[in-house]
Structures are given as structure tokens and as C-alpha cells.
Length: 218
Image 1 (cartoon, rainbow, N blue to C red):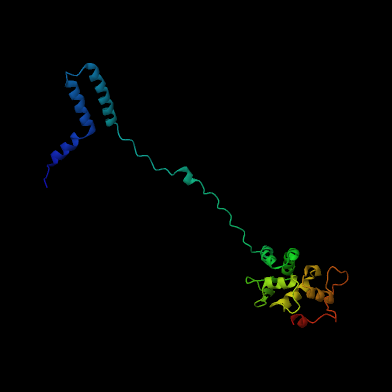
Image 2: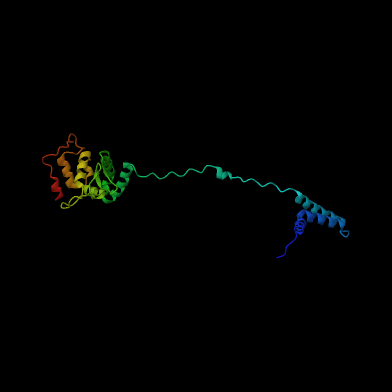
């Protein structure tokens, strides 16, 4: 590794400066007598222009600027979808699924029944179990209950789990008998004298001739 004296290093950098080299080129061009005058004038014009540019101080650095689009407020986020949290919207969703299990002529009655039950504090929980207030009918199922209510069930087919509490709730909310497809259950409505379409027959007191609930379960 060779050591270079400081004066040589300084001289080297001075020689390699652009303005120093341009000055030498201009002087050399002026001293050349074999160059035609028109060509010499053209070359001098180019060298002087470069020399003037080299002698100009460097422009100050441009300050950093944040793009305007980054300063603008972000666009509003799309509103989240409305969740089915209200009893009415959940009733509509539940009615849609129950509709696949009942005759077509009775589908239109599902949602009105669910809404009347909700108003009277009869609901279906997240497991679709029928519940009275906060007390669920364990292992009951909304689809099974409505299917038994609206289909013409065989005589020997027992009601599903929780149907007794469900049917008593239907008595209390006074649904029309035309909303019931099970003929045996319509007979119970007739005996109970709870058909709201018949004037003067809204008593909640069962008739002595009303069939026993246990007979329906047999």
C-alpha cells in the first residue's frame, strides 16, 4: 500500500474539478493555430457555456413535500351490513327456513304467528328452541313445531317436544283456525272456543267438551 503526500492529493482533486479542466480546454483551444476560425468560435461557445454551468452554485435541495392526496382525509368506510338483531328481522329469517317444511298454502301464516308470539314474549332462542319468557323448552325445534301445526298429521303421530307449551301460546295470542293445517288441532280450537274469526267466542276458558291434551299425545 503506497502512501501519497497530502499536497499531491490536493493537487489531484484540483486538477479533476470540472471547471479546471474546462479552463484548460479553453486555453488549449485558443493556442491552437491550425483550427479554422469558424470551428474555433463554435467550440469556444460550447466550452464557455459548459464553464458557466460548472461555475454556477448548486441549487438548494428541494424540501420534502407530502403529496396532496396523502393529506386529504380518507374516504369514509362502507357501513357494515345490518345484522339481524331485532326480533322482527330474526323472525323473518326464521320464517324463511320454516317455510321449507310446511305446505305452500300455509307459508304466509308463519311470519304473522312469529310476530304475534314475539309481542306476547314467546320467542325462539339461538338453538331454535321455543321459550316462554327466558325459559326454553329443552330440545324443542321451531321447524318441528310449525310442521306439526300446519301439516295434516297422521292420527297416531305424537306431537314434537315442546308442542304443548307452543300450542298453549297460540291459544293466548288468538291465531285464526284457518292458519292451522292439522285437522285434529283445529278441532281443539273449536272446542276451546278461541277462534278469533267467530264473533263472541274469545273466551280463554276451555269448554267442558274440549278434548284432553293427553289424548292428542297418544
